[in-house]
Length: 530
Figure 1: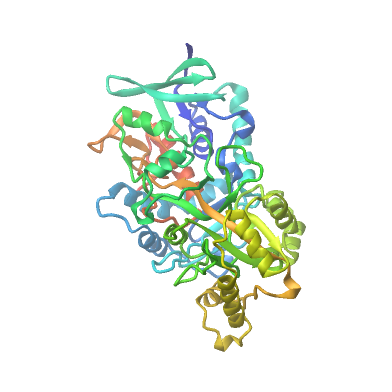
Figure 2 (figure 1 turned 120 degrees about the vertical axis):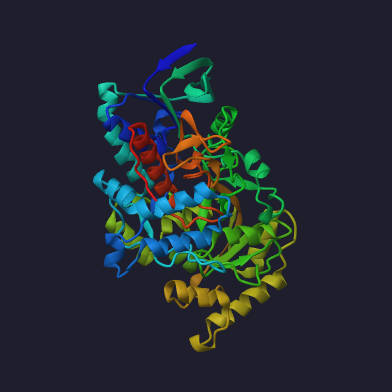
């Protein structure tokens, strides 16, 4: 049995764990971090992310002429969340996030050397339920990779001094309890059992959405039955093991059926885990079709408004996957893949390459998807494309006449003078971009492209219930001595700070705020007040 000891043990070395460690180390604490992955994966899923941060009343917003406020942001959050009346801690965390995200997350990261793209992005505007009233998605210049390499660099002096010890390949299976207080954890390092003892244990091991079994077990009732195919866009070790450990010592798990999944996942062509998927950013001008080639409706599906509703509509279909129908011109202008890996110009902070991609399209990305992704088919004519779609499905369910009618009807609307257009998708395109849209059948824009898309699992919106100091709570609502939960493990705060829907950019931000709140509490302070 290997034995470790420290003042604080942090389980998980993603963004939440690293931020918490930095704050504790700055206080003079000795910290032991245990991570299940390997050294080259330090930083977790945040390192692979796009790096978006939800913040309110920032310099970037003001330069763009946006006069945002905490009051408006909180109203938007509460409308989108649709909190149950009894969800007291999630509501408190929502108020705390909105009120503190700019001084305690945005400016704290700026102080660590993080910079943001000059123009904030406007996502989750809301469809039938109001969402973001203003652009609040602040993209880290350099993506999540820059975010994490910058924070990791701040750890190096503490590693060299010995105040921080970091062990990889450590699977924590349970917590050590003595006289009602958590005094450490235990698990396996390969084939070798270990125990780690400390005054404080911080769970920062992510959510449950890396386990397809748990995703299915907690599938939300609004979505009906779980799809036959669910792709994994979460961390491969986000399997809920530490949720079980917290529950075993009296911790409360709440809102596990609240998830932030996406409707536009495709199979990863370089899979590093079972069922690995890529999350596409669907083109606004593409037609979103069901498994028969019918346009999903009656409201056409358009991204940027309500991600959860997209998942709901796809899950209502007899076969719970969908198709995007577009052409090469639309793909170049609008198709994107979420994450650092597929946005090299931003990841490498190359302005010239970024402007080239904006003006000419990301040809590297489109060529890669066409060549390597098994869910992408390409053809010069519609009959040929439908044949390839059916070949991929393994049947003849996609009907050529249906697809032709859908495309012709849409294209006829696109080609009309603007004042005579009567198509909801075109109205939303105009709202999103003041952009007229592109017809699908255009000889100058070939080849045609069809992309088969599946539901892709991403974030757990529920988790270990915590108070505003990130202390894990028991069934009576009292803190469990010695136990904290932060980041996605805590549902990004309170066991479900987002309620039913997330306003995007609030995941990384939630990790930072919950981590800093935990570290302040260990130091006898309160970071967040409402």
